[in-house]
Structures are given as C-alpha cells and as structure tokens.
Amino acid sequence: MAKKLHPHALVIPCPYQGHINPTIHLALKLASKGFIITFINTQFIHSQITKAHSPSSGLENIFSKACESGLDIRYLTISDGFPLEFDRNMNSLPFLEGLINGFSNYVDKLVGELVKEDCVDPINCLIADTFFVWPSIIAKTYEIVHVSFFTEPALVFALYYHLDLLEENGHSGSHENRKDIVDYIPGVKSIKSSDLPSLYQNSVVHQLIYKAFQDVRKADIIIANTVQELEPETITSIQEKHKFYAIGPIVSANFTELTISSSLWSEHDCTQWLDAKPRGSVLYVSFGSVALVNKEDILELAHGLMLSEVNFIWVLRFNVLGQDEDDILPVGYKEKVKDRGLIVPWCNQTRVISHSAVGGFLSHCGWNSVVESIWCGVPLICSPLVTDQLANRKLVVYDWKVGINLRDEESITREEVRSKIKYLMNEETSNNLRKNVAQVKETFHNTLATNGSSNVNFNKFVEELKIKISLA
Ligand code: UDP
Image (cartoon, rainbow, N blue to C red; front, top):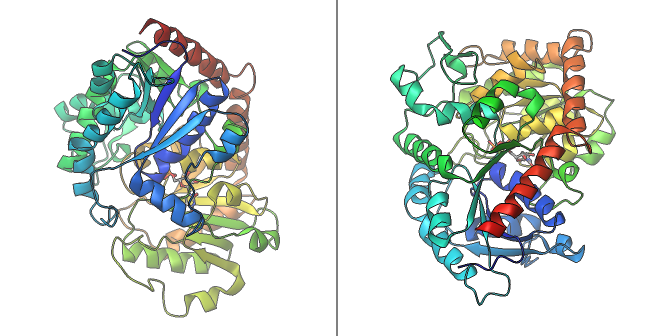
C-alpha cells in the first residue's frame, strides 16, 4: 500500500488537445499547492508535441520550465496501444475502442509500479479525465484516492450523467429534425433537443460515455472546468449526489502563472499581422483540434468570409475534412482576400484572441474555445458540429447571451455567414452582446480572485484531497 507522507498525484488527460490543455494547467496549479505530480501523456501525444515545437528539440519533460521554477512535476509517457504511425484522426472509432478496452492495461501497470512502498515518493492519488471508463477500478485496486476531472461544463456533465433518462424519453438518437424541449434532467430547467450532445447514436461513443459516467459515480471527488455562479442550478443538483467542485475557468497563464507549450501542431505566429490591423477589426475562425467539417460548409464559409469584407484569421487544419486534400479553398481565394485574411494551419489561440485587434470568434464551441473567448471578452458566432459543442452553444447563445448562432439549419449558406459576421463585427448591432460578454468576463476573472468562488472551491478541494490521501 502507498505511503501517506506527501500528496503525490498521477494526472492523466484523455489524449486530445482539448483535454490535455486544461489538465496541464490543473497539474501546474496543484504542484504550486505543494503536490508532487506525475503527469502522463501517451507516447503519440508526446511525439506530436515534440515535433510541433522543434523537430530536433528532444524535449523530454514538457514541464521542464516549471521544474526549474521549483515545482515537482515528473513526466512519463505510456503507449495507447497503437503504433505511433497509426492515424488516430482518420481511424477515430477504432482508436476510441482501444481507449475503452485496452488503454487501462498500460495505466494499471504504471500505477502498480508507482504505488510501491519502495518508491521514493509513492503515488497516493489518481486524477483522471472523466471520459476514461476505468479510473475507479484502478484506484480501488491500489487503494488510492480517485479524482475525476471533467474538462467541460456542468450542463454537459448532467446530460451525460442522465443518459438513461434521455434514452427512456427517446432523446438519445439523432436530434437534427426535432424541435421539442427536454425538461426532465435534474438541474437542467430546459434544453432544446437540438442542443443535446450528438453522437449518442454512434455505438462506440455511446459505450464510452455510458461507461465513463458509470465510473465517475464512484470517484471520491469530481472537479470541473466551470464556474458556480454561471451554472448554479446544475451544479447544485450534481452536488446533491457527489463531491463536485467548480474550479474554472481554466485558461492558460491566467489559471496558473506558468505556461507550457502543449500544441500538437506547430503554431503559426500571427502577431505581426494582427499588429497591423485596427482594434477589434479581426474575426478569428477555428473549429478546434478534432472536429471534421464537410467541404460544402468550408466553401460556404470561405465565400461568406469574403463577402463580409471583414479582416479574418482562419485556422484551417490540414485534416479538417478527414481526408487528404491539399487545396480545399476556391481557386485563387488567397489572392482575392489578399492581406484581409490570414489562413493558417494552427496558431497559439489564446495569444491570438487576446490581441486587441480581435473582435469576434467564429467557433465550433469546443469548451476550451468558449472559455478562452469569454476570458478575453470576445463575443462568439457559434457553429457547433458534434458532441458537447451543441450544449455549449446553449450556454453561449441562450443562457449567457455572449454569442449568436450561425447554424440554424443543417447546412450553412454563404449569405448567412456574411450577415452573421456583419452583425457580430459591427459595434452597434453587437452592442448588447459585447456588454454581456464583458459581464461574464468579469465573473470569470473575479471567480479566480482570492475570495472568488472558484479559488475558494479549489482550496477546499485541495484540503479535502489532502485529508482523503492521509486517510487512504
Ligand atoms: N487551439 C490552439 N490553436 C488553434 C486551435 C485551437 O491552440 O489553432 C487550442 C485552443 O486554444 C483550445 C484547444 O486547442 O485550448 C481546443 O479545445 P476546444 O475544447 O476548444 O476544442 P476541441 O479541439 O476539443 O474540439
């Protein structure tokens, strides 16, 4: 059994950009509270990060700068069960199946090694992403404390947690053509069925969510990247059953004082281009790190951006279509938009949207993108595609009113893109949105101040975790 002297957490994110980023910041913050951290990335993720930063950098520990500043963060990599050259994006479902069925063997073996009495500082706590299906089993085997980290909002947690209710009521399939309201989920007053997370109908994703949300019920503590004041009823409802702490917003350097480069692709530096643009004049466009966009939508978006006449930075990932295609933009597009548009394969998003030239964000509504945009006071145009992005849009557009919806129908048209961009980027028409986003931004910033709810929650979480570790 583990020694109980020093709190030592094994921290493990799901191997996706949107999960790795907040988990890194969480690890830094816990280390700054005196925890020893052993952070685990898969070998594939580590090789991506290393390649993205410099092909020959040989970066062994992505936390080396943090360690130099005195934090004790150890860094290990393990196999995800697939060879490095396996294309995880093109084969997303077999990869997910592997994460459900095989990955825990590698984690189990590692935890077994690190809890041994003869280790210098044996681990006594497992902090794992809520989307894993096995953490409570491993924590129980090795008698260590289990913290589940949910990187998304409480609304999404509640919906996944009550998947059985959605199924009973016929809301677990496709919602594309449904307009009815769901009002039976505890803590969620009402949500349109079109805002429910999609992909339940896919059996692998369904299995993953179902199993993960059975497993999370056994966690000792759950922490989530959300804010108490912004989702009060949903959070209270979850707290009736579980130790659940809202500790967000988790946004790079503002959550901790350190930044770690965790991009899986090389970042194009947009600073010079932005410096030359007037304040608030640039629309930033990105669909995150995983979601696939169909070619028709890309073309409508391209034309809409052109017709809108606003300045824009568009992150067009090389694999955004899910298939190899070199030139997906209309012929001569880049020449036509000239210096008005900068199209890049990847960038440092928080650096871009915190630049004063950026005045709007057309987003797929990945939760990190939503949080980062609000943190910077930038209103959104929402074009959600899959999973939690649809429910996140509800918070942005209908609850907090800090964004507008782009996609009312299944596909988007260039005229719709043009008019929504015009609306958002015009100071007069978007005046209310901008006031709202300034208010939610203030809530975000205040909540991390000394007496702010997330800061207080984080400290309570740390104290409770230390007690549980000492008792384990
Ligand atoms: N991101 C980035 N550069 C880009 C696009 C995205 O650094 O060009 C980061 C972004 O800041 C966010 C993460 O990638 O932290 C994407 O997470 P999100 O939850 O928004 O979307 P996901 O990729 O999970 O769908």
